[in-house]
Image (cartoon, rainbow, N blue to C red; front, side, top):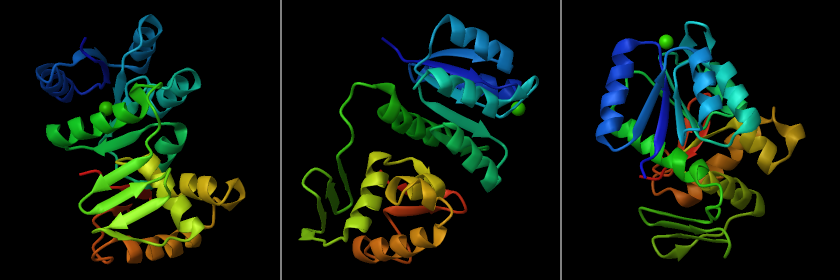
Length: 228
Ligand code: CA
């Protein structure tokens, strides 16, 4: 059975491009041009993933993110021409899974969709507890981090921070989300903690800490653990 994607986009060219490229990949694609149309379609049947543009004729896509998130865990990927950091943070904190800034390539879109589906699409799938890429191996249950065959020694806080990123591997996690989950909800403004601990983690994990391969910075937004 093919996966259903709802594309909410008012730009006709981008809509047809998405429809064509996703159909070729075997997705069943539904399209909506407005927030109202999208809401009507969502009431009728739930897709497996929503691809959402922000500037829509009858409202802002972020409202749709909030509406969907109140009721459903389905993955929401925002596709937007806007690229202000504050906007991205607002979206992710409202419950969007990830965002892509226009223009983007189809290969990148598909990769982000796969990550979002893996995290949300199957609610009953076991949680992610291991991660492996390019000589780095992380096993959360065994509390083991190995680089090029050598076990690394992380402090409890470093491990907690890394574990949070492993659970969302491939997706950006905002500063606020990291601070709340690792240090606690009263620490969401303490971004200097993050800078400090991320520096320590990179020094241990990365072969070249100044050019991170694993712990990627999404400038002004958050951090992302690389998956490819
Ligand atoms: Ca638009």
